[in-house]
Length: 401
Image (cartoon, rainbow, N blue to C red; front, side, top):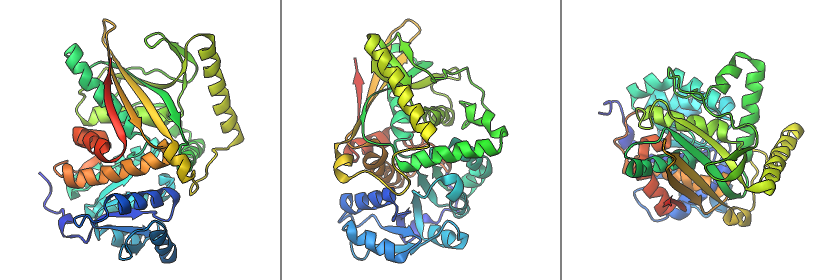
């Protein structure tokens, strides 16, 4: 039962896109303007620091001229409080969140306003859970982290593989492997900036290093089994392929374990999960894996991430991008249950903008009964979110033999 203090139904807007003048925020606003044009039941607004830039973005993306513009600044808590008081939910793209997100989360929690972001910063997420989960449950706020490529397709991919395991094995699998089969496009500059901010925070406070290494960081009070490190090329006997470390595994695996935690451990308390990139069989597959690691290390040593926050690929690059993810649930007798998740746009921008938009709409329209608290999107919305992503966001979820 929701607390009586939730006043959201009387608010002017359903969704406010905060950070709409940034690259990803603009893509989200553009998606809402195009996908929900003529939908008289969805009232949304754009928010950012500069009214002139907001107006320019509104005109550039072809949003209706009467699309509301709200001035709000991460450095001005009063402006954030005013913004969240006018809407049922906020989509935030203003990161790194550990630098610019804490005041907004606090404002949403205090006001009972739902919140969605693209966070890939596990230390900050844990800080927000510790600081605000009890209050969110009291005020009625639903705080939903990591609604983009990190970590939505992975969280839901494991969910689908486990659903298939239940059908084939009669029980969930305590071992699931997430594997990137193919991907074209870029991860976002914001993701890279968030990663560096997390490392910088850990360097300043060495007590955070142990937390950062904890695979159950986002499941407070729970200690699970030892997990694969996934930090070097390995041959995967179950898939007959060499594998290389995946840069986003640090956040994705923790979100998958939090999802299991939030759903009361349907995968079991002995659940083991890792993510790697498939690079092929034989000597060539091994060479590919080593080259992959060398390329990633060179980028890290150079401090380069390609794209910087606020920048992004061209429309042609976004629309020609894609991703193909495989999830394999393993039974003790060696049987496998497989699920695949595919996206029709580049992962870091085009697909992410659609995913987070549909997360917000799913919670508002399809799953209003989700209780207050701090959530992963898959644990909160499950099958309803999968359906919405397939119907509207260009994702497909399939079972493979």
